[in-house]
Image 1: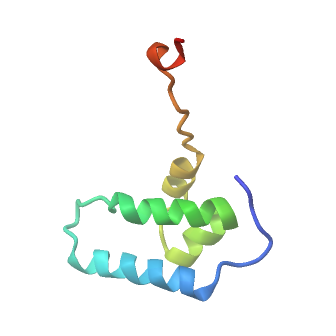
Image 2 (image 1 turned 30 degrees about the horizontal axis):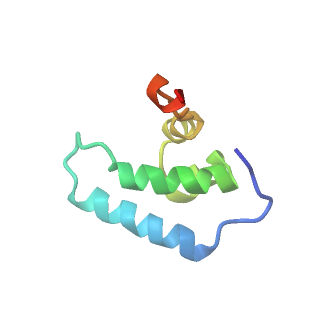
Length: 83
């Protein structure tokens, strides 16, 4: 995870912030945040830091950190490596 010293652009945050606010207006209480929103938040968090993005978007720090730390390791099957 790379953290830059600069801040995310207002456009980057505003777009995602509006998306989250719209989702919050129409969601049911028990609905989880859509994967697409989490993916966008994780992308920003990897670049600018989890705390900064969680605060800016008013989302749960722990949940964002957990999702940011999840590393998908590509799996290679035996068939792909065989000659």
